[in-house]
Length: 256
Image (cartoon, rainbow, N blue to C red; front, side, top):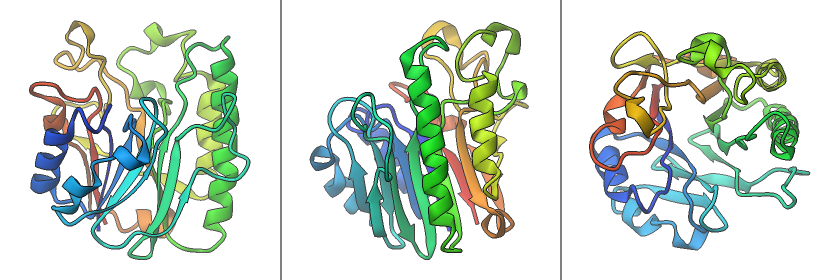
């Protein structure tokens, strides 16, 4: 199975790039985040022409997640029980069973600043996700949770840790929330960069950050032990971040 995850930063705006990338990369299952469209306006017909079934969860121009699969798309769930909201639950999580593997696509709240109510919401959301994953993992099926977690797990996952002091994405509570999720029995599948030494997946559009490789690793793939043990390759597709009108995130591609 080839599994990929990508924050596309508006699926309709990036549709030609997405279709070209699907044709070239040929993933079996794709987790998308920040689709920024309602479920009924997701371009399902276009991806279906490439052999992909779609499960989408979106409410409009903000947030939104989706799963594309050409190896089955069963037991689809949108959101999770007692999911925190701001104030209402948002379109941030979707899961399905694809060829026997339980796959989650998640878009964790940004948090804005540590003194913001959005930060409190982010931590509550991550805690709720942990409980939902624990329940799903109790079935014993192989599971992967993928997406934009908006947290850099370690200082090595940001281009200059000193510049992030006092900011979200790197605070001890956020990193502890990720550690609590991994403690369920999930492994961090760290992809290799296609160029350079840093496994970054996100670069701000401004000030030439991508070309200077001033980025962050905030897009993650967590997999249960048996599944993680079957990883043959994992890489960050930097090429998808280049050219005209890219997302500010690059896809991660994992071969099991």
